[in-house]
Length: 322
Image 1: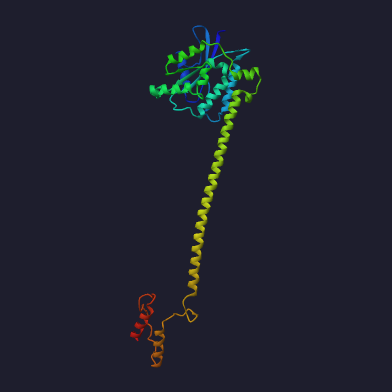
Image 2 (image 1 turned 90 degrees about the horizontal axis):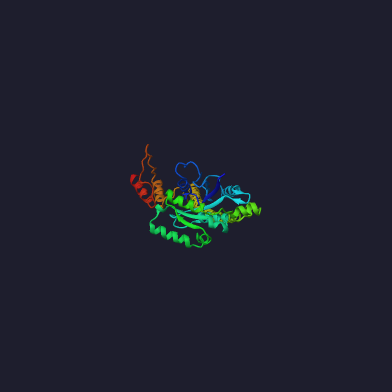
């Protein structure tokens, strides 16, 4: 039975892990991720999902369980078959965001300090940046205390991957020259018999989940306060509109009441309030025995429609007619 070496590839989703695996496999074996090299060593590459897997229903806890179970299976008695671990990062990322940082922390906790000498960090997507931009970001990653510096100080290496078979093969050959290593999560699960939640990786994931929970709680509270504020504003606007409508209803009802009362003379409802000159003409006609002229069959308006101050004009016209 040939000597077996396992190399595990990890990193965020979309960083180029699958592309690296395809180019790392010798030509003619593209459909397989394991082969036996010229030295009789069986090599197996394992592409793992990221802790930001976009598939529906796949959680970070699912990913941790999947990786932990695989690494446990590769621990044969007291010997691990894991020779190398590769962490993949896009050099085209202008900064390492929250998801990338979470993936890096989980990778670090899974490996543990003692296995970092078996780690190769590869940067991808070099065709997306200029040489100057790439060198600058590479230096930031190497020297950042929250980035790759802690891993590099413990023995990890950092290499460029340019999507060629040669660059992928260089990384694989470097790791094949390492002694096998037992990663921290395997020691905790198998040798120390810890439950997954109490391992370093499990505790890290619990912290990440709790931080996200707190973040969402704050967001929910802010949304609730915003909703309350908007409801108050809407209620105030509606109350203002209601008050305006109430005032308009009251005004219209006053008009109806005023219309029902009609016009009055000497306190008698329904009598037209003609001016004093009209009363004098009526008395004069009665003394001389004159009667009012008969109204025409189709009487037309004697004057223009009544307007304020025009009743006297109508009386004068009546006098002239008589």
